[in-house]
Amino acid sequence: MNTIDQFNFEGKKALIRVDFNVPLDENYNITDDNRIQGALPTINKILKDGGSVILMSHLGRPKDGPTEKYSLKHIVSHLSQALKVQVQFADDCIGSQAVEKAAALKPGEVLLLENLRFYKEEEKGDEAFAEKLSKLGDVYVNDAFGTAHRAHASTAVIAKFFPGAKYFGYLMAGELNNAEKILNHAEKPFTAIMGGAKVSDKILLIEKLLEKVDNLLIGGGMAYTFAKAQGGNIGKSLVEEDKLELALNLIEKAKAKGVNLVLPIDSTIADKFSNDASTDTANNDDIKDGWMGLDIGPLAINQFKDVISSSKTILWNGPMGVFEMEKFEAGTKSVALAVVEATKKGAFSLIGGGDSAAAVAKFGLEDEVSYVSTGGGALLEYMEGKELPGVKAIND
Image (cartoon, rainbow, N blue to C red; front, side, top):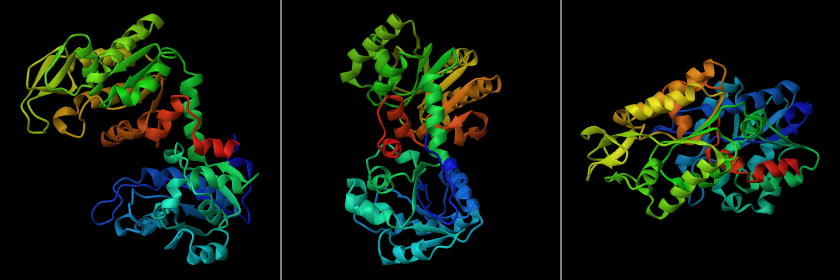
């Protein structure tokens, strides 16, 4: 793997694709800076070598060019404090100011470019746009795992302008190494915990995992598609009517492969989708008409905890319920705590980005698991066996 450890950046300008797509409140304060923290080791290594750093990222999904709320200028002071270096800012990513400021950068200095997605060419993977960006630096580093599954100009196309001078940053390398550990070097028993709303979002991953895991726990909204497929009454719970046959096929596949497929026995149910709903518990195949399952229930929590506690490798992707509402967070929180306990006993635990990462962060447990991925979609696609454009671009 071509990582930045193989290169001395002394006197070089490193053009780094980072993922600074951080959440901001209405006053433009960063509410979660994990993505910035994740990029610091790579930036600091290059500065320590005696190089300078030009950072490029997107923020949000601007539709019509430059938009105040999506400007990366809002993160400059936070980033400067995190790096203990006064970060310079270019109010465009390819304009004359970017060119002049990049050219004038001295060793130890950092320049942040304005939002790449202010140009439609970024998401289109436009080669001319990528070439303009490439002229700003001597060496290209991709440290944005969260966008590695996108064939964008700054993630997949730009690398061709740096033959022999393109590397993975530490965050990217760590993500790939940990995903590989799960996919190809998992210690048994290997348990995958799948949650979230839809079976259809995870179908490819579930099929891939059935080749590898000993236990597959299914929670979240997708569990009700399985319950209905087996003839259960699920009330107003979320269901994918067109995936009932698929759910039955997955149950059969798991049996044929000797995988312990665990579906929740019961649910915490509610009479409306709200934190002030009336709640009750019910078996997953016997939910009252007009009520919906919004979390796994107490029996399911114990069922899942038993399996997790005896696991040596754990992959968790997707919450067990609507954990954003306090009334329906118990299942997700209990699973998170069970994963922490198993990790303390020596298990390797990978939290698969997205809502799972948000959940462990909400409960303050991100430092008590083995690894929290920064890329939900990218990790899913990598686990499904797809080649990620941002990874391929460095490897080619």
